[in-house]
Length: 451
Image (cartoon, rainbow, N blue to C red; front, side, top):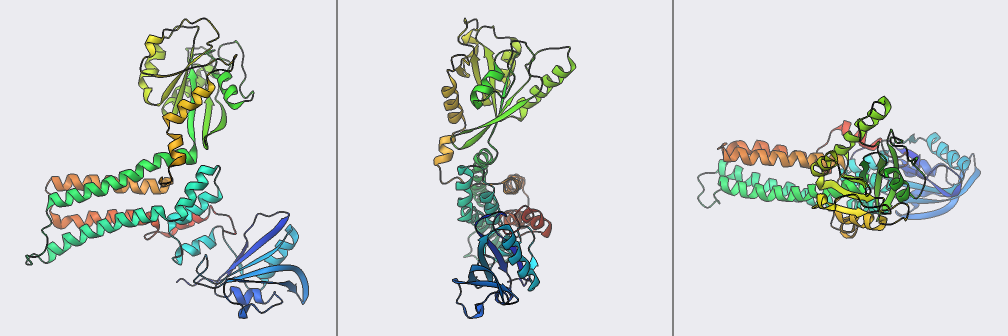
């Protein structure tokens, strides 16, 4: 258990409301609040609540409920006192000020959660799950953040680390005690087999990361195609608002126009782009270049064709290059068809008309199927990974691949523990069993003061 000074902060949003909570944590938390509360908190049992007045110079400030939670069975692992007062800005700040005058220090952002981690109450990835839950922008993120709080990722990482320890132990026992005939012989083939099994587990977790990215960041979707095929009209129809300017003049959209809709709990981040064509207009040319750059960056391409126009070679080149993440929208189906559907074999196709408002439910259904959104929402076994956790797992995975190749190239067995220990340490950074202070400072600085 670490020893810290006593900290205090307002744990609820500042503003007028029914209640506000001032949280105090540290070895002196009970004595400190006791100085400003009319009842003797030192005689209270842990995890009990007392009604009374906060006072200053024996004058009542507010009638409050005071909760006492003694360490180590508290969120931070220390003695924690929470003062539930009436939720006005003036009174809340007044009580916090009294706590600070009584000897507490104003908590830094995320310091309560940081102490919970340092005192062994939670793992680092579980602390990150708390942050994800606080900042959740939809129910799906919140659901998977709860999964993180339950320790699903912690269990998976601990299992991987234990597997590595077992391999290490078998290697080192065979190296240190070769004279014992009853020891199982650890061969390179056996090590490779166990490393392959380890790699499969890691890659399954990394596969989860694709779903995690969709949950957290949504699907980056660009509407692209020739000028005047109806991209801006499609954007406006999907958003159900006049976000983009629509005219019959080609080249109206010269920069990106963005909007966002929710699709089965997942954000669809829509970007309308400048029409693809050769132009002498400098501004429009820059817009076309930006549109082409977005092709590589996007998760989904909605390539819009005009039902009334023939497909060009440039259309076909883009359709072929990005086929795996592309849906073809044949727009303006209210007009005469001059487009050859035979050229689009093998592509996902949706026919739309913004005039008649048709085809858009079919489009949404195709996007849901393409990204398995229903499966993501229904699968409670998905383990949410943030960017830091994904990068650490990816690094460990690459090292295992490299290690397997080295073994196949006759690297001596007695050199393998060095690489295995490095992989073990990388995995340990995910749970925080191995960490550095800079990482912690950066992580917890993103939390609010009272958390």
